[in-house]
Length: 186
Image (cartoon, rainbow, N blue to C red; front, side, top):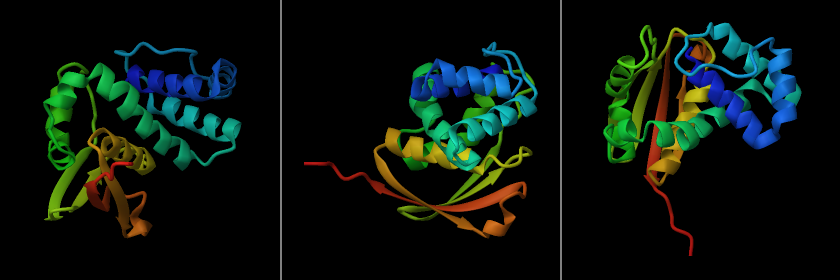
């Protein structure tokens, strides 16, 4: 993964838990203190950071990955990639349908970028079938966090149902995503 991912992990931990916790996590993971955003790093570093964070924070890795997905949308994608975000869809449904196209545009900036792929099939006006393909194992909770972050960004409420939970570690993971406009509080 590129350093921007690990740098964002660093940012999330520091923002939520402080510098001392980040120091313990990156030290336990035997990872650098900071990362060059445009430099590729071995995926093992990212997995090691998640494992160390799980131990340090006494949280399941899935919880950390989901929180990181939400953080990525709110603090990285919408800030550093605002133009790409804006050009990828004006609604939640449009955006999800354009994920592969967006990843292709990002490929220009990051040589050897190996993004996941998404097949999005509308079932009805508020339900999508989302098939997630990746050679990287165990990142479905991160994708769930990304979807939750996008739901906040596009002001929709979201429900995710996994189809065939047993296939959690297979290259294709299917989700049924139900969405509706968020209710405004009075």
